[in-house]
Length: 244
Image (cartoon, rainbow, N blue to C red; front, side, top):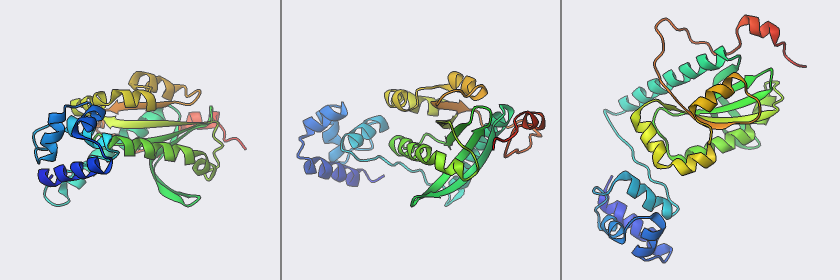
């Protein structure tokens, strides 16, 4: 990040709104001196929490990216993401869900992909899952999850699933960094995804009614575990014949 350019950007957005530094600080809940320091090129000094608050108050988004050895970091993150998806698929399968990873869609001109789309036949519950190996841009992630849940019934109908409820789930890695980041914006997640790990686990066993939640999962996969994309075990599959 270029601190000087960052500061100039903050000042330009603030002036565009015709705010004083004090007004921006009030809205971001930081001191005027912090705003002044950032605008003067001191963005390397305040914490990311303060920078994020200042940027959010201006209606913008803070994007911090780590670059390492070309695309190697992307490959590492992709592997961590794949392991989290694998752990989730196993949990869903054990709970009697039919689950598919990487579902692409195009509905009414909107297109994209869903990390995991899961169907529970007995309750006709549809679950739209977003999996992140690192704590994401909060607003963009929540907006994307809302959009996919809104389109969920149409996507499910294409697979012959007539959903009675649509639920949303954000999956994050079980580590201190992820928990600390979520705690820093706890009020936002309490409103958007109020269910947490224990409640989510109970709901996955008996998915009655819609659920919006967040769960932290370890990305460790037991040795010898095999990837299973879809479904209930054979005995459950016989007990839950598809509805026509």
